[in-house]
Image (cartoon, rainbow, N blue to C red; front, side, top):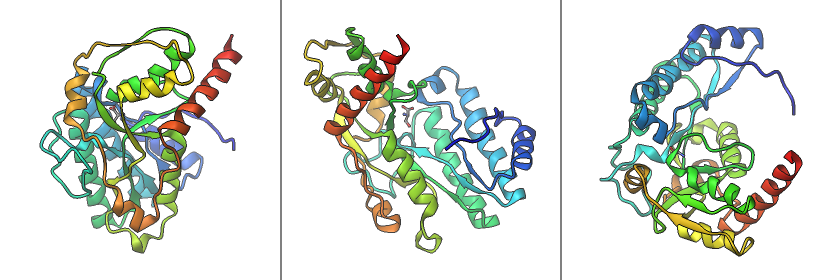
Length: 274
Ligand code: SER
């Protein structure tokens, strides 16, 4: 499906409003954000883009009666949150600016839903693995970078420990989650934003081993940097039973079929570039 493509600056409310008016927009999928690792390098920018940007989108949506999808993240959790099967309702005490902006964002969205009846919905995405876009400054980027290194027959230097386990999701599931939630019967939604959604959980070492089944000479060296501390503050597995119950969430992809599909897609993509 094709449509017009225009750039807007979420920090500049007028550019958002102009596009909404010009194209008669009825729904915004607001995905613009500064992720965790870049956010730690520039916390001020992370706040501006993630919170002020969301505020502008919510304000324009309130005024023009739009629907909004806004993703939160597993980064809302922190060191005090239970790490295994993290519940929907739990301690939200993140230690990254990215996490702080996502907790603030969840509260802001809930406020607009309660106060103005705005139809804003969202999930807490885990690390997203995509064959289309390169990772953009998150702590979970290694899970995508590994594939590129394997296909280019390069050794990968991984910035988290081999035993680091984080929740992840393959992009087709991430898109399905957004569409399913936006299509869900509103009367069934008791949370609206910040639904836990689980895809798969694996360690960096398990991912490397799965890739090695297809690329046997693939080599990984583990050299943790500042992102290890961020990874250690996040859960390992997520309880998404509320999303399953309220809007029928169920992931289709696991580690094995995701790795196979990623390698096939990226091989095709890199071949077409050479
Ligand atoms: N992928 C994100 C990050 O690593 C988590 O939401 O920052």
